[in-house]
Image (cartoon, rainbow, N blue to C red; front, side, top):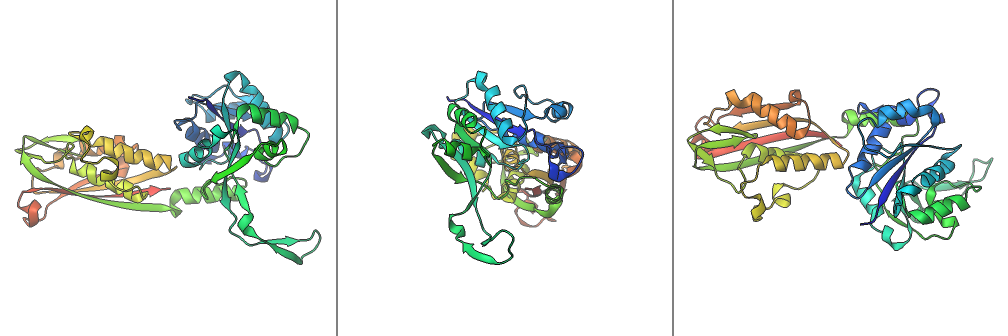
Length: 382
């Protein structure tokens, strides 16, 4: 297995942020921007290690940003980004990486999918850049003039993002050879040295936080502008048994619920609600009932998988509301335990989880005591 190291460039001063704390150490979602960026690379299964290039004045801020995270020892950057990248590349030489991904610290919304897109073609001895199309019409205007000279064909224009991936030895040599040339990104250095650079799909959410307005917008989005809601519903019939499992809690009863897994109807509805909020399909797609490995499985597996998918998309589960519909058993005395279980599964406070029971007043299959139904609603910021 080839070794891939992520090199996070965080040595900038952020002049467009004004005086004070550099932008990579400002808070987003209650954590420093740099923390978010480092965490997403550390959590990617194909990244062997993360190295961060910082400014000498930011050591204490950096220590706080990566507290508790397993990163390689930091190194110091240079007078500009280009020099900082070179210093970082030289600093990881002893790690003997096969490939390196170079990423801007202030792109905290990069996804695992974009990272994987960049990694996929790396074995072909070429540089890789994630790009998105230019959607605005581009005009050429002469310097010192307000008149349009001509309109540029935007179909051949693409916006480059990071991470940009390279064969380690190739980009190290390129960075040294171009040290006296002005390069706007790492791929430009590779291109100048004759290295082929290919493009892969980037993402419109992989934004670079450059100004205070960018940060304010990102925080507004995080506070609800892009909230998504998912709903789930499930039903299980009663069968012979001595207990039912609801929200991960075993409740003594004269019957059990029939199902391929542990038949936790409430958690099944919850998982489907989470999948629904992110367009992630349903339980059956991820855990087919025809697959024997899920026979009698603990349904918390399904919920945790759905929650992990939210985190992979840089999302955050805000709250979960579960309604259990049955005449019996009565769930009131178990409600607090259910809330605690669900809170741990989702990684959110107990105050963000609600579990309630209701009946159908003797009507329908639940009213006749033939089974239990459950509904769930989940809100996600993504």
